[in-house]
Length: 394
Image (cartoon, rainbow, N blue to C red; front, side, top):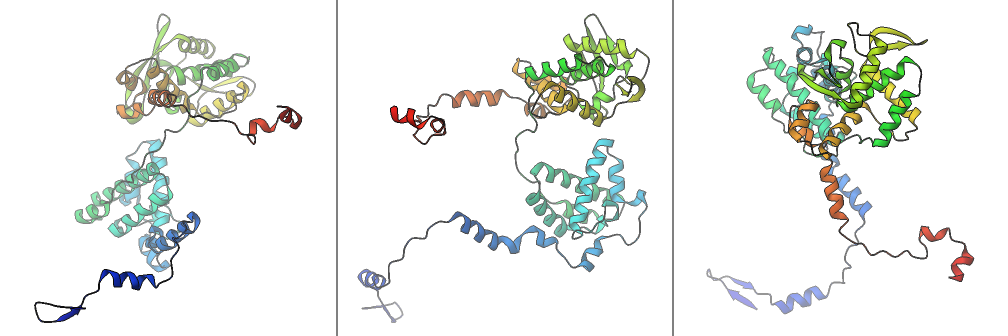
Protein backbone atom coordinates (compact mmCIF):
# COMPACT_ATOMS: atom_id res chain seq x y z
CA UNK A 1 0.00 0.00 0.00
CA UNK A 2 1.28 3.47 -0.94
CA UNK A 3 0.26 7.01 -0.13
CA UNK A 4 0.57 10.15 -2.28
CA UNK A 5 2.32 13.13 -0.66
CA UNK A 6 1.80 16.84 -1.44
CA UNK A 7 4.71 16.75 -3.91
CA UNK A 8 3.31 13.73 -5.79
CA UNK A 9 5.77 11.21 -4.31
CA UNK A 10 4.43 7.81 -3.39
CA UNK A 11 5.71 6.39 -0.10
CA UNK A 12 4.93 2.94 1.32
CA UNK A 13 2.54 2.81 4.22
CA UNK A 14 3.25 0.09 6.76
CA UNK A 15 0.20 -1.13 8.58
CA UNK A 16 0.29 -2.10 12.22
CA UNK A 17 -0.47 -5.73 11.32
CA UNK A 18 2.56 -5.86 9.02
CA UNK A 19 4.79 -4.51 11.78
CA UNK A 20 3.46 -7.14 14.15
CA UNK A 21 4.06 -9.91 11.60
CA UNK A 22 7.61 -8.70 10.94
CA UNK A 23 8.54 -8.47 14.61
CA UNK A 24 6.90 -11.78 15.43
CA UNK A 25 9.35 -13.55 13.15
CA UNK A 26 12.28 -12.67 15.46
CA UNK A 27 13.08 -15.11 18.28
CA UNK A 28 11.85 -14.11 21.72
CA UNK A 29 14.38 -12.19 23.78
CA UNK A 30 14.67 -12.96 27.48
CA UNK A 31 14.84 -9.89 29.77
CA UNK A 32 18.37 -9.15 30.99
CA UNK A 33 19.26 -10.42 34.45
CA UNK A 34 20.65 -7.67 36.71
CA UNK A 35 24.03 -8.53 38.18
CA UNK A 36 25.34 -5.96 40.64
CA UNK A 37 29.00 -6.98 40.36
CA UNK A 38 28.96 -6.97 36.54
CA UNK A 39 27.07 -3.68 36.48
CA UNK A 40 29.57 -2.05 38.86
CA UNK A 41 32.53 -3.36 36.87
CA UNK A 42 30.94 -2.10 33.63
CA UNK A 43 30.40 1.36 35.09
CA UNK A 44 33.97 1.55 36.37
CA UNK A 45 35.28 0.50 32.96
CA UNK A 46 33.18 3.15 31.23
CA UNK A 47 34.20 5.96 33.59
CA UNK A 48 37.87 4.96 33.86
CA UNK A 49 39.01 7.14 30.92
CA UNK A 50 37.39 10.19 32.54
CA UNK A 51 38.75 9.97 36.08
CA UNK A 52 40.25 13.09 37.58
CA UNK A 53 43.53 11.32 38.29
CA UNK A 54 44.15 10.96 34.55
CA UNK A 55 43.75 14.70 34.09
CA UNK A 56 46.77 15.25 36.36
CA UNK A 57 48.91 12.49 34.83
CA UNK A 58 51.41 14.14 32.55
CA UNK A 59 54.89 13.38 31.22
CA UNK A 60 57.74 14.00 33.66
CA UNK A 61 58.96 16.97 31.64
CA UNK A 62 55.48 18.56 31.83
CA UNK A 63 55.24 17.97 35.58
CA UNK A 64 58.65 19.56 36.01
CA UNK A 65 57.24 22.84 34.69
CA UNK A 66 55.34 23.27 37.96
CA UNK A 67 58.50 22.92 40.04
CA UNK A 68 60.62 25.90 40.89
CA UNK A 69 63.97 25.76 39.07
CA UNK A 70 65.80 27.41 41.95
CA UNK A 71 65.08 27.86 45.62
CA UNK A 72 62.88 30.91 46.13
CA UNK A 73 63.27 33.28 49.06
CA UNK A 74 60.65 32.64 51.71
CA UNK A 75 59.41 36.22 51.61
CA UNK A 76 58.59 35.70 47.91
CA UNK A 77 57.25 32.16 48.19
CA UNK A 78 53.41 32.18 48.16
CA UNK A 79 53.15 29.05 50.33
CA UNK A 80 55.51 30.46 52.96
CA UNK A 81 53.75 33.85 53.00
CA UNK A 82 50.33 32.18 53.37
CA UNK A 83 51.47 29.88 56.18
CA UNK A 84 53.15 32.74 58.03
CA UNK A 85 49.78 34.38 58.56
CA UNK A 86 48.28 31.35 60.33
CA UNK A 87 48.42 30.22 63.93
CA UNK A 88 50.87 27.51 64.98
CA UNK A 89 48.28 24.73 64.96
CA UNK A 90 46.73 25.77 61.65
CA UNK A 91 50.16 26.26 60.11
CA UNK A 92 51.06 22.63 60.71
CA UNK A 93 47.77 21.35 59.28
CA UNK A 94 47.73 23.57 56.20
CA UNK A 95 51.37 22.87 55.38
CA UNK A 96 50.58 19.15 55.27
CA UNK A 97 47.65 19.94 52.96
CA UNK A 98 49.85 21.99 50.63
CA UNK A 99 52.46 19.21 50.55
CA UNK A 100 49.77 16.76 49.48
CA UNK A 101 48.57 19.12 46.75
CA UNK A 102 52.12 19.63 45.50
CA UNK A 103 52.63 15.89 45.24
CA UNK A 104 49.38 15.41 43.32
CA UNK A 105 50.09 18.25 40.88
CA UNK A 106 53.58 16.94 40.05
CA UNK A 107 52.59 13.36 39.30
CA UNK A 108 53.65 12.04 42.70
CA UNK A 109 57.02 13.76 42.83
CA UNK A 110 58.58 13.99 46.27
CA UNK A 111 58.48 17.76 46.62
CA UNK A 112 57.03 19.97 49.31
CA UNK A 113 54.90 23.08 49.11
CA UNK A 114 57.93 25.40 48.97
CA UNK A 115 59.26 23.77 45.78
CA UNK A 116 56.10 24.22 43.69
CA UNK A 117 55.59 27.20 41.38
CA UNK A 118 52.09 28.12 42.53
CA UNK A 119 51.91 31.08 40.15
CA UNK A 120 51.80 28.69 37.17
CA UNK A 121 48.59 27.02 38.28
CA UNK A 122 45.58 27.58 36.06
CA UNK A 123 41.93 26.54 36.12
CA UNK A 124 42.72 23.27 34.33
CA UNK A 125 44.97 22.27 37.24
CA UNK A 126 42.67 23.36 40.06
CA UNK A 127 39.52 21.86 38.50
CA UNK A 128 41.17 18.47 38.04
CA UNK A 129 42.66 18.73 41.53
CA UNK A 130 39.24 19.38 43.07
CA UNK A 131 37.78 16.29 41.38
CA UNK A 132 40.70 14.19 42.54
CA UNK A 133 40.39 15.39 46.14
CA UNK A 134 36.64 14.67 46.07
CA UNK A 135 37.38 11.08 44.98
CA UNK A 136 40.09 10.35 47.53
CA UNK A 137 39.16 12.27 50.68
CA UNK A 138 36.15 13.12 52.82
CA UNK A 139 34.41 16.36 51.90
CA UNK A 140 35.70 18.17 54.98
CA UNK A 141 39.30 17.18 54.28
CA UNK A 142 38.99 18.08 50.60
CA UNK A 143 37.54 21.51 51.41
CA UNK A 144 40.32 22.12 53.94
CA UNK A 145 42.90 21.43 51.21
CA UNK A 146 41.05 23.67 48.76
CA UNK A 147 41.05 26.45 51.36
CA UNK A 148 44.83 26.12 51.66
CA UNK A 149 45.09 26.22 47.87
CA UNK A 150 42.99 29.39 47.60
CA UNK A 151 45.00 31.07 50.35
CA UNK A 152 48.28 30.27 48.60
CA UNK A 153 47.00 31.52 45.24
CA UNK A 154 45.84 34.75 46.88
CA UNK A 155 49.34 35.18 48.30
CA UNK A 156 50.79 34.66 44.80
CA UNK A 157 48.45 37.36 43.47
CA UNK A 158 49.36 39.78 46.27
CA UNK A 159 53.05 39.18 45.58
CA UNK A 160 52.51 40.20 41.95
CA UNK A 161 53.23 36.75 40.56
CA UNK A 162 49.71 36.29 39.11
CA UNK A 163 47.34 38.70 37.47
CA UNK A 164 43.92 39.29 38.97
CA UNK A 165 42.23 37.41 36.12
CA UNK A 166 44.56 34.41 36.43
CA UNK A 167 43.94 34.30 40.17
CA UNK A 168 40.17 34.52 39.83
CA UNK A 169 40.05 31.82 37.16
CA UNK A 170 42.27 29.44 39.12
CA UNK A 171 40.19 29.86 42.28
CA UNK A 172 36.87 29.45 40.49
CA UNK A 173 36.28 25.90 41.74
CA UNK A 174 33.39 24.98 44.00
CA UNK A 175 33.52 23.28 47.36
CA UNK A 176 33.02 19.55 47.75
CA UNK A 177 29.53 18.79 49.00
CA UNK A 178 28.84 16.20 51.68
CA UNK A 179 27.84 15.63 55.26
CA UNK A 180 29.35 13.31 57.85
CA UNK A 181 28.41 12.26 61.34
CA UNK A 182 30.24 14.00 64.20
CA UNK A 183 33.46 12.26 65.13
CA UNK A 184 34.25 10.91 68.58
CA UNK A 185 31.83 9.78 71.22
CA UNK A 186 30.18 10.90 74.45
CA UNK A 187 31.68 9.63 77.70
CA UNK A 188 29.21 7.99 80.06
CA UNK A 189 28.93 9.16 83.65
CA UNK A 190 30.22 5.80 84.91
CA UNK A 191 33.34 6.15 82.75
CA UNK A 192 33.95 9.64 84.07
CA UNK A 193 33.67 8.36 87.64
CA UNK A 194 36.15 5.61 86.78
CA UNK A 195 38.66 8.10 85.40
CA UNK A 196 38.52 10.30 88.50
CA UNK A 197 38.75 7.25 90.78
CA UNK A 198 41.87 6.07 88.92
CA UNK A 199 43.50 9.43 89.62
CA UNK A 200 42.54 9.30 93.32
CA UNK A 201 44.00 5.83 93.84
CA UNK A 202 47.57 6.88 93.08
CA UNK A 203 49.72 8.48 95.77
CA UNK A 204 51.97 10.25 93.30
CA UNK A 205 51.79 13.93 92.49
CA UNK A 206 50.51 13.10 89.02
CA UNK A 207 47.25 11.86 90.52
CA UNK A 208 46.21 15.32 91.73
CA UNK A 209 47.42 16.96 88.52
CA UNK A 210 45.61 14.52 86.23
CA UNK A 211 42.39 14.80 88.26
CA UNK A 212 42.46 18.59 87.88
CA UNK A 213 43.14 18.29 84.14
CA UNK A 214 40.25 15.89 83.57
CA UNK A 215 37.98 18.05 85.73
CA UNK A 216 38.68 21.13 83.59
CA UNK A 217 38.39 19.22 80.30
CA UNK A 218 34.91 18.04 81.24
CA UNK A 219 33.71 20.68 83.74
CA UNK A 220 34.79 23.64 81.60
CA UNK A 221 34.86 22.09 78.13
CA UNK A 222 38.41 23.21 77.37
CA UNK A 223 40.39 22.27 74.32
CA UNK A 224 43.80 20.64 74.74
CA UNK A 225 45.64 23.75 73.61
CA UNK A 226 43.58 25.90 75.95
CA UNK A 227 44.29 23.59 78.88
CA UNK A 228 48.07 23.53 78.53
CA UNK A 229 48.28 27.29 77.89
CA UNK A 230 46.75 28.11 81.28
CA UNK A 231 48.89 29.90 83.86
CA UNK A 232 48.35 30.07 87.60
CA UNK A 233 47.40 33.74 87.22
CA UNK A 234 44.51 32.76 84.93
CA UNK A 235 42.62 31.17 87.82
CA UNK A 236 40.66 33.46 90.12
CA UNK A 237 39.57 31.57 93.23
CA UNK A 238 36.33 32.43 95.00
CA UNK A 239 33.99 31.06 97.66
CA UNK A 240 33.36 27.48 96.46
CA UNK A 241 33.77 28.61 92.87
CA UNK A 242 36.31 30.18 90.63
CA UNK A 243 36.86 31.64 87.17
CA UNK A 244 39.32 30.77 84.43
CA UNK A 245 40.56 33.21 81.80
CA UNK A 246 40.94 31.04 78.72
CA UNK A 247 42.89 31.91 75.58
CA UNK A 248 40.92 30.32 72.73
CA UNK A 249 41.30 30.10 69.00
CA UNK A 250 42.24 33.19 66.99
CA UNK A 251 43.44 34.93 70.17
CA UNK A 252 39.91 35.12 71.57
CA UNK A 253 39.71 35.28 75.35
CA UNK A 254 36.73 34.17 77.42
CA UNK A 255 35.92 33.63 81.08
CA UNK A 256 34.70 30.21 82.13
CA UNK A 257 33.24 29.49 85.60
CA UNK A 258 34.78 26.65 87.59
CA UNK A 259 32.34 25.14 90.07
CA UNK A 260 31.58 21.94 91.97
CA UNK A 261 34.07 19.12 91.75
CA UNK A 262 36.15 20.97 89.17
CA UNK A 263 37.08 23.80 91.54
CA UNK A 264 37.80 21.27 94.30
CA UNK A 265 40.14 19.27 92.07
CA UNK A 266 41.92 22.41 90.90
CA UNK A 267 42.31 23.71 94.45
CA UNK A 268 43.82 20.41 95.57
CA UNK A 269 46.30 20.49 92.71
CA UNK A 270 47.35 24.05 93.54
CA UNK A 271 47.97 23.01 97.14
CA UNK A 272 50.45 20.44 95.78
CA UNK A 273 51.96 22.53 93.02
CA UNK A 274 52.04 25.84 94.84
CA UNK A 275 50.81 29.23 93.73
CA UNK A 276 54.08 30.40 92.20
CA UNK A 277 53.76 32.11 88.84
CA UNK A 278 54.11 29.88 85.80
CA UNK A 279 52.25 27.19 83.91
CA UNK A 280 49.24 25.76 85.71
CA UNK A 281 50.00 22.18 84.65
CA UNK A 282 53.64 21.19 84.69
CA UNK A 283 55.60 18.08 83.88
CA UNK A 284 56.37 15.57 86.64
CA UNK A 285 59.47 13.45 86.08
CA UNK A 286 60.41 10.10 87.56
CA UNK A 287 60.81 10.06 91.29
CA UNK A 288 57.86 12.41 91.72
CA UNK A 289 60.08 15.37 90.86
CA UNK A 290 57.98 18.31 89.72
CA UNK A 291 59.45 20.67 87.13
CA UNK A 292 58.44 24.06 85.83
CA UNK A 293 58.04 22.77 82.26
CA UNK A 294 54.69 23.33 80.63
CA UNK A 295 52.82 20.25 79.44
CA UNK A 296 52.33 19.75 75.71
CA UNK A 297 49.08 18.93 73.93
CA UNK A 298 50.42 15.45 73.16
CA UNK A 299 51.09 14.88 76.86
CA UNK A 300 47.38 15.39 77.54
CA UNK A 301 46.69 12.47 75.20
CA UNK A 302 49.15 10.26 77.07
CA UNK A 303 47.69 11.21 80.46
CA UNK A 304 44.15 10.36 79.39
CA UNK A 305 45.22 7.11 77.73
CA UNK A 306 46.95 6.01 80.94
CA UNK A 307 43.92 6.80 83.11
CA UNK A 308 41.58 5.07 80.64
CA UNK A 309 43.67 1.93 80.92
CA UNK A 310 43.74 2.10 84.73
CA UNK A 311 39.96 2.62 84.88
CA UNK A 312 39.38 -0.49 82.77
CA UNK A 313 37.57 1.39 79.99
CA UNK A 314 37.66 -0.76 76.87
CA UNK A 315 36.53 1.87 74.34
CA UNK A 316 39.16 4.48 73.54
CA UNK A 317 38.39 8.15 74.09
CA UNK A 318 40.21 11.38 73.35
CA UNK A 319 40.50 14.66 75.30
CA UNK A 320 38.08 16.25 72.85
CA UNK A 321 35.47 13.65 73.81
CA UNK A 322 35.38 15.25 77.27
CA UNK A 323 34.67 18.62 75.66
CA UNK A 324 32.05 16.97 73.43
CA UNK A 325 30.40 15.43 76.51
CA UNK A 326 30.47 18.79 78.32
CA UNK A 327 28.48 20.45 75.51
CA UNK A 328 26.09 17.54 75.05
CA UNK A 329 25.32 17.20 78.77
CA UNK A 330 24.61 20.92 79.10
CA UNK A 331 22.20 20.84 76.17
CA UNK A 332 20.53 17.70 77.53
CA UNK A 333 20.09 19.46 80.88
CA UNK A 334 18.17 22.28 79.16
CA UNK A 335 20.87 24.95 78.92
CA UNK A 336 20.36 27.59 76.26
CA UNK A 337 22.41 26.84 73.17
CA UNK A 338 23.64 30.45 72.95
CA UNK A 339 25.00 30.21 76.50
CA UNK A 340 26.67 26.88 75.73
CA UNK A 341 28.22 28.46 72.64
CA UNK A 342 29.85 31.16 74.77
CA UNK A 343 31.10 28.64 77.33
CA UNK A 344 32.60 26.46 74.60
CA UNK A 345 34.15 29.39 72.74
CA UNK A 346 32.54 28.60 69.39
CA UNK A 347 32.47 31.41 66.85
CA UNK A 348 29.26 30.09 65.29
CA UNK A 349 26.24 28.55 66.98
CA UNK A 350 25.98 25.97 64.19
CA UNK A 351 29.20 24.42 65.46
CA UNK A 352 27.64 24.03 68.90
CA UNK A 353 24.52 22.50 67.35
CA UNK A 354 26.60 19.64 65.93
CA UNK A 355 27.15 18.41 69.49
CA UNK A 356 23.42 18.41 70.27
CA UNK A 357 22.28 14.85 71.03
CA UNK A 358 18.62 15.75 71.59
CA UNK A 359 17.78 15.18 67.93
CA UNK A 360 19.12 11.62 68.11
CA UNK A 361 17.01 10.93 71.20
CA UNK A 362 13.92 12.23 69.41
CA UNK A 363 14.59 10.01 66.41
CA UNK A 364 15.11 7.01 68.66
CA UNK A 365 11.85 7.72 70.46
CA UNK A 366 10.01 8.01 67.15
CA UNK A 367 11.49 4.73 65.89
CA UNK A 368 10.28 2.95 69.01
CA UNK A 369 6.70 3.78 68.06
CA UNK A 370 6.88 1.11 65.37
CA UNK A 371 6.45 -2.59 66.05
CA UNK A 372 8.24 -5.15 63.90
CA UNK A 373 6.55 -8.60 64.16
CA UNK A 374 9.40 -11.08 64.34
CA UNK A 375 9.28 -14.79 65.19
CA UNK A 376 12.41 -16.79 65.94
CA UNK A 377 12.76 -19.74 63.59
CA UNK A 378 14.15 -23.17 64.30
CA UNK A 379 17.49 -22.17 62.76
CA UNK A 380 17.68 -19.01 64.85
CA UNK A 381 21.03 -18.51 66.66
CA UNK A 382 19.08 -18.24 69.90
CA UNK A 383 17.86 -21.83 69.51
CA UNK A 384 21.11 -23.28 68.21
CA UNK A 385 22.50 -23.63 71.74
CA UNK A 386 19.49 -25.66 72.93
CA UNK A 387 20.23 -29.42 73.16
CA UNK A 388 18.65 -31.50 70.41
CA UNK A 389 16.82 -33.75 72.91
CA UNK A 390 15.16 -30.74 74.52
CA UNK A 391 14.06 -29.38 71.13
CA UNK A 392 12.53 -32.72 70.12
CA UNK A 393 10.72 -33.02 73.47
CA UNK A 394 9.09 -29.64 72.90
